[in-house]
Structure formats: structure tokens, C-alpha cells
Amino acid sequence: MNHESGKIITIFAALLLAVVAFTPITAKKAPVENEFAAILPQEPALDAHAYSIKIIGEKKPLAKRREWKRLAPASLTKLMTAVIASEIIRADSPIVFSEEVKKAEPKSSDAGVGEKFWRDDAIRFALIESANDAALALAETVGQDIFIAKMNEKARALGLQNSNFENPTGLDEAQHLSTAEDLALLAEYITDTHQELWEITRIIETEIFSADGRAHKAKNTNELLQEFPAITGGKTGFTDNAKGALIFLYPVRPGKTAVIVLLGSSDRFGDGRKIIKWLETISWNPS
Image 1 (cartoon, rainbow, N blue to C red):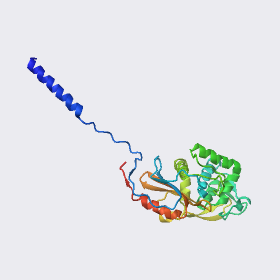
Image 2 (image 1 turned 45 degrees about the vertical axis):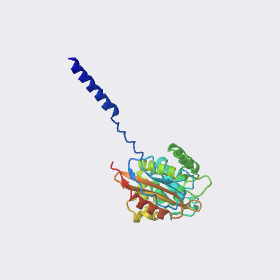
Image 3 (image 1 turned 90 degrees about the vertical axis):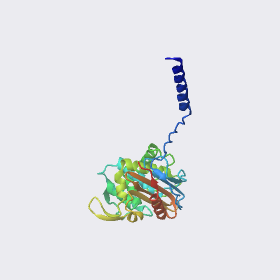
Image 4 (image 1 turned 180 degrees about the vertical axis):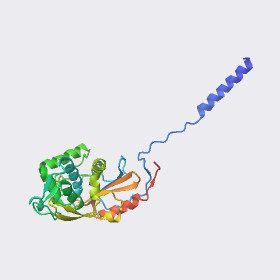
């Protein structure tokens, strides 16, 4: 190689290094925390004191307000009651509606004193009609103190850090409390392990039969079911202290479902309608 050729190569190499040095590096996009939400419209104006709206399986809620606040959950409690009954009571166990459980107020089934039902039929009363006597009868089968202890053990196991259950019905007691955030976690657990409970909550009206074949009518307390048949499960609640409570599942796209929890609402079904309409206006990223 002559001197002139070596000089040319040296100059070319220097130019190449300069080009590399000053070429801008394209920054990688940060991961989207909520994979499925693209454009969220302005949150609806809700009456609920606390709420959480999130996609099952996603960490970040689509919308929330005071989701951390401990409030009376009313009959949303019966979702935990149904979980514990399903897990610790045999399906072929007779559930007796004793004289004591028939004193339950204010909402009870039309089952008679001493009438027996199989476990899943008692659960249907508790979830469809929100019958307090059915919830108490389930707990009484194993002993109410044991049953409530199991409810709280399950709450701790699921990470429901701000929940405490004092009864299986949801009637007001000073330390009977939960949060919208915790109840959304419970809803996810039911979706993963007890889908049959959500199926029960979708029944609008049915007959429930006692162990000896007597028929009892049961009508769902959730007004939204007939208006929005896409709802895949839910539960209502109401007490003077809790005001209106509501939890329901609504599919937003194939394979993706939102869980909505409302606490302390004077218009729970109106709030539910607003949320459904809001969910239907969201633009979603392609998956």
C-alpha cells in the first residue's frame, strides 16, 4: 500500500467514526402500564362516595375515587359468604333455615322455619335475592363464629388488607368494613376460581327448590341485568349506613372484562348506567 492510499483510508475511517458518533439513538418507548387502555374519556360524574373501575388482570384502575377508604360494604359481603360456603361446606350438605335465622331482617327469603335446602340452593337465595336468612343459614351450618373467622382468613389470604367481616349478611356493624379496591380483588378471585357464582348472580328470576321439592320464587335485586344483558355477574347491597352498593362485571372487548365497584351511592343503578356508557366510549389499543 502506498502512502497516498493509506492516507485516504485513514480519512475515510475518521469520517465513518464521526457519522456513528453523531447519529441520534432512537429512544425505546416506555411500557404502557395499562396495556389495553388507549384513550380514556373524562370520567363520569358519579354519586358514589368511593369507586373502582378496572380491567380484570390489570394493576392500574381505569378510574377510581377513594378506592382505599374503609366503608360498609352491605350485601356485597355475600360474595365472600358464597365463596366460603362453596369452599368449606359440602355440596350435599343440608342447609337448615332455623327459627333463629328466620329472624333476619330486613330481607329474607320465603323459606319456612325448619325447611332444608342443598348448599348451592341456599347460595342462590343469598346471591339472587340477597336473602339474609340464607346467608345466616349457610354460616350456621358450620357455626357462625367459625364461618366468620374463615371469611377473614380468606380476606387476608387474598390481600384484602382493609377488609374485616363481622357477619355473613352485610348488615351494619361498626367494624364490618371493606374498600372498593379490596372488593375488586375479591371479584377477580371469584372470576378465577368460582365462575359458577357469577353465573348465579346473572339469573334474573327463577324457582329454588327445597330438599323435599317445595318451590320458592327468587327475583334478582340487580336492576341493570335486563337493561344490559352483557353484564356477566354482580351483586347489590344496601343498608342505612352503607347507602347503595353495587359490584358488576362488564366485558369491554373479547377476553377483557371490567370490574366495577361502587360504595356509598344514593343512585347505584344510575351510576352503573353512566359507567357502562363511559366504558363503551373508550378507544382501545390493539392487543
